[in-house]
Image 1: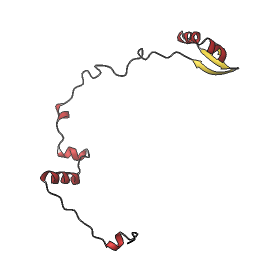
Image 2 (image 1 turned 90 degrees about the vertical axis):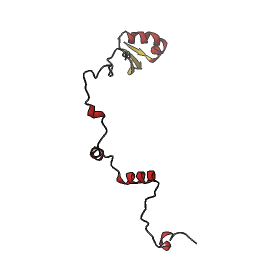
Image 3 (image 1 turned 120 degrees about the vertical axis):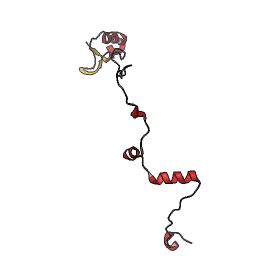
Image 4 (image 1 turned 45 degrees about the vertical axis):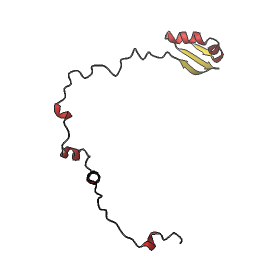
Length: 114
């Protein structure tokens, strides 16, 4: 059924009841249809994507929960020798030696005025 904007504003609750009943309700501005009232489907009526017990019968091998070997850690990208060396040095209390590149001081601050 089609209604003008004025009729839709005046009888809005009745139009909602019609839409809930499954009837097509069109709101028109002049002779041009501008809106359509449709019922919202009940989300509880749809089957949920999350079901309890969806993993029934799925079995895991105990190896899934075992710690990774060093080879597996490297394979999965967890190998960082520089970070490991810094961590070991921090634990032992020593400071690793770093290579210091000495440059000509006149070239380092060439834009700085004295």
